[in-house]
Image (cartoon, rainbow, N blue to C red; front, side):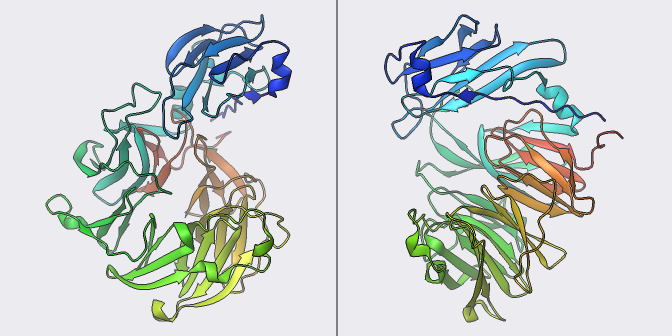
Length: 449
């Protein structure tokens, strides 16, 4: 099957260069220029005319939509070319004064229409969620569980709802029909993250308010949740390995639970690498991921490192072993994701440094994989001698990389503008976008087949 790759984007030019062509009225003014004539312009879903080759277009942005006092807006341009291809690009902007936007023929190229692209890439089905903002999902043999939320202050009238709240949405895995919707939280608290996890017969949900609720999956639809008693606040991420549950997030803390009882806390700040005190940016001591195998705990943080601990036969016996870190790096960076391949190869996904590999027994760095995206690895999962990985929010790509042939064999993109989360089950790939769950053939035909 032939693959069509298109580049879509905007170029941000210095304000000084634009000042020669147009005068900025105030901080509410957006300047747009395009080398392509006839692009329909929408700002916050409202039509605002079309581009021309005459020069710079000036748009006044009336109201701030969003939080933080800086506003939050979206520009979309579109022009149909024929039955299969179109010009299309979108950009969210929020910081004042708004940076001017320039669209050239190099950055905005014809693309295959989203529905056709999705079908070509193996999309089987999709389901629209009850609420248009969703961040995490989990699934078992019966259900798909989605952590979603409603927002009252957003630029999109389609996504705007009467109140701010968080929900648990449950869908039948076979029919994709809604089974149950549960209100979790009406507190509009800001948080580092939130999570949902199936582990050892329980479903765990970490809400934005920091509470960890859990149910026995067999009694989920007929019983009230229990709350995990937690020593530390704002640890909004969860992982489960074997008999243990790990909770982490802000403050460099990792909490360990056994049978839903807290048994150990690890303060990773006590093991900062030599030279930390010389960093200009002291970071925030956030932990993005943990991985536990063979009594060894790996902890990924925002200092460009993975700390390694031995837990022994009991987490209470934990001890620090070493730090996996590129000593040539001149600045701290986020280590975002961890995965294990063939029981001994640790995959480390980073922000800006690509994917790096270590031996979990010797702690030595291994040879990098060729032909893999080098910039950002946001989320990954190893399955059937392949690694599936995303590059972060606001990017539609989910790559499948063959670890035997050492090349990318597929890119699952189509209607979604980003991949918030994904799972693999029963030879199908499930991806989560703002308001949809997409179901894909996890083994689509490759180019040339």
